[in-house]
Image (cartoon, rainbow over all chains, first blue to last red; front, side, top):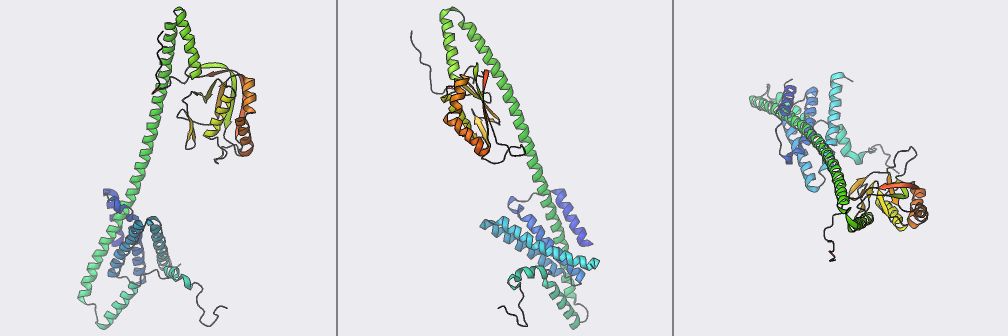
Length: 110
Length: 293
């Protein structure tokens, strides 16, 4: 409940205040979101498996975002930023979907 | 051939990365942490207070991270929305600007035509006194005819050039089926060679300074973009023009394009054509020579 509220609060704040982000960071926002979503789905699944641990969640969240950002940054420096962000989104997307499927199996038993 | 022993290697062993990605989707550290916790609980009955404090701190961090995630998501979504809004706003502004400029140009063109008529009327009035004036007026008329400045009428031919059609009657998308600037140049040059005295393309009179060229897919005549069909009117003897243009090199070339690419090309005689004048050419270096009488 609290995590969902926290998420909703963050979205509302971001949409309401529309803070300006430095242009150099703008390309990384979507990647950071997808990487963080992967950590969140993993956490939800772990919660349902009964093995959730806050420390692991925090570490995986931060490292996911940092690594995804780093990969895309490196890609930008090498001139393949677009392709690498596609790759990151695909890989993380697959994980998100498999975790979502596991969560679904937990909840609906189907 | 292949290893068919009891321990058969997986067919997809070369794609272990993909398999890992699909099967081990949950971070293994969750399982590790759970195992550790169970171990601690087994060794020391009841969780130690230090771990509980660390867990509370981690929980706070987790909530902060979730708020941050939501914040970043909101910012990114807001940005996309704003970018779209600015793009469509820019486009609408440009469209309005173009329409306004087109209206301005039309108004100015109408004004130019009016002023030109006034000048012509004043010229006729000024030159209609005396034999010398009439001679100058005749000379002026001849020069205007030759230079393409003044409007002219007479019999001649009309040449129509149009892009190829596909079977549905829609304009083709291929470059081959489109009338190119050099086709129009070719037709115009052929007409001049066949003895045309004045030529206009889509009601733009050609002078010695008129360029026929292309910019992108559009053909520019006198730097004004035209759209098909291209109607080339030429004043001259219809029989002679038709005969020597159609049988000439450029006429035959255009005819072959109709067979090769489906270009549409037609020539017909006309009893009475009126070609507009081009307006005064802007001479930048040439000066009229003053002959002392």
